[in-house]
Length: 197
Image 1: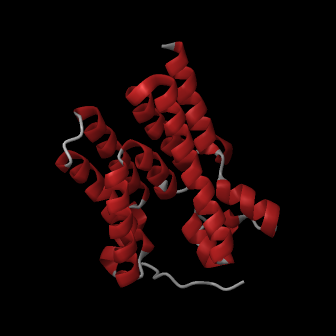
Image 2: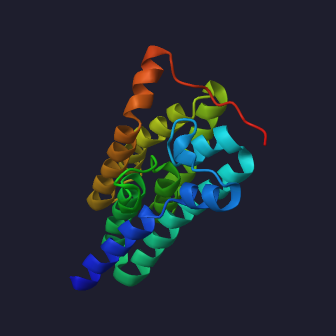
Image 3: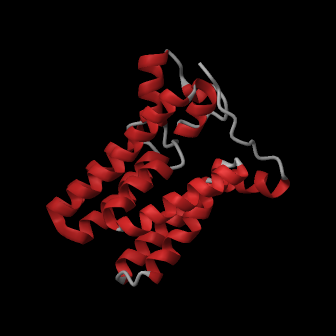
């Protein structure tokens, strides 16, 4: 029990390390929270600084989810892996190092679910990319994937604890995109425009 609690706390703390803040400050002398949407995530980095730093941030955020869930699986099996997935995403979205603010958790969630449900993760990746490519709305691709994740986990006949975890991760992602959803519905959401730098 103690091992489980410690690992969940560590997962939260690892999730709380803001890849966007670290990378943008260290390599680009930029506090990304003061530019664009102010969101410390790869999409805002893409808009403000361009593809290279955005790719670095996405990879680092992805790695947080992937590594911590994989370690959770090795240390404590499926149950700890599922709990670690939720903890690392919550850490990313509500970072203790950023005053309980953070990103929207899509890259970190993707890393986590690639370990938990690899087939579903790859399907969602393809769907998300297609939606973004057609609509030019990153948020729409993210929300679509968030809605579909628990549905696909259920359709692929995963156990109930996987379905519940999928539901929690999906709801977290939708909640973090609530302002984007409002703007999408009002036709005011910003489309993806690459910034060259």
